[in-house]
Image (tube, rainbow, N blue to C red; front, side, top):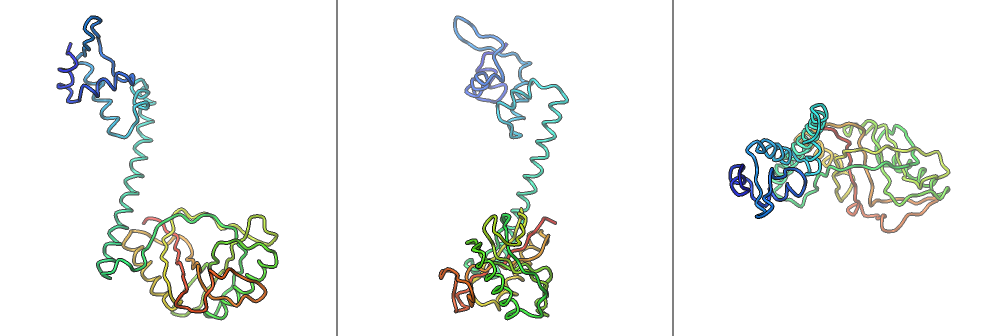
Length: 277
């Protein structure tokens, strides 16, 4: 048998670590001298110690390791398979973050201006909306008319939510400016209207810019370029969210903070649901 100091050197762990594993019920000394209190270990316990160190390195907590040391082969195999899946998912997430980081670095290098709009990847929560869907021949007045009608309907029902209105583009061609659009007004839960629930999106790439809507195609190009560099692809229809905008307010009213007549002060967020390629 080895005294604890010799065993720690043999195992290449500290005496403090051996004390900790003893207290946690993972690896107890084979013998403790009742007169001196010296702890003794057997060389065969190295195998158990190495198993503990390996499981700890794989990310298992000490209480999990204690259970795994006593588990049968089938149970251990099942736990290790689950941990493998967790590690694979974590690696994939880190690789995705790395691609997005590289895309951001390239964009900053190309613009030499880190203050330019940045693409964010985040979750979009589910939202209840009143909406009107229609194909419009061009943007501008036809879309404005749809929003005026939708806002007036929601106002009459006193159902307006504080969330920003938005457009869903079910198909879109900025060259032709012809699109199947759905204008959406977020509403309170239980509103007495014909409303529907837009589901949560786990991953949405978004870019926010300030200024007139003529900048939108440029912002979309930047968003799509980021997606390509980040290893992402579009997984649903695009959205435009209007955080500050102009409105005629015919038959309804909106908070002054969201309104402006100066297009230079418009604030628009472009959202693209994405998934990894």
